[in-house]
Image (cartoon, rainbow, N blue to C red):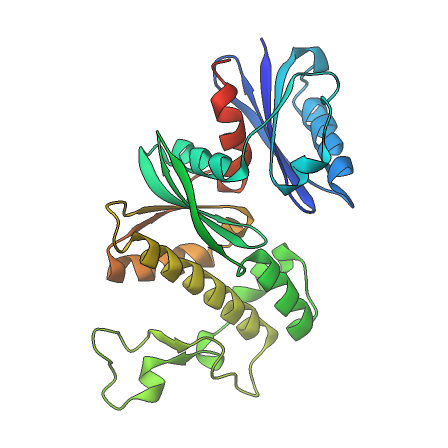
Length: 275
């Protein structure tokens, strides 16, 4: 049975997915390497080995992502195609969430916002706030740049030691419709006793609140109210809690589907699954 590989070649990480002829997901894999070409070929080789897929069974390779521009030839002489990254983000988000339309938010090094329907995918903007922000500030603030280590550290953090809330700045305990626990200023009250765990959680809170509110603004004058969140930052369990808090107040629905990290690679493969 033939296999289609969808590959999202990022700046330092390559994500690969494989589908068989029945449109069944064979598996996923993420590979890091010093350069995009090495990362790409390493991902293909590792994926085929891990899932016992002979190279001759691979019918199509579909590339997307910023690193795809470095690949001009066929991969192992296999027919190789390219899909615009924003289109792949939109299609992947819809496919994973099983929705007809949504705002798809891809949280990688930065964050992209894509309005997607079955008929049209439009990149409406983006933000430089994302995983790169987390790694850069974590390295400077508490000398850590490993995603898994930051996630573990943040579990024991306390936002009361780093964030300024509505409760902190008014005797009325409320401003308009904003609840007292709403953030007034991210990292605006860093105590001298704040721990690395507090700072890690504060950074995550800042990033997810920023992205979450930008999604709210994007949906404000739109019929679309479903926000599908994808990308590497979805590994953090704190994202679900923060988005749930925003969801209760702003009339949108945040969805973090299974395999959200691989959504762009899945979206790249999607148009070729019938081919």
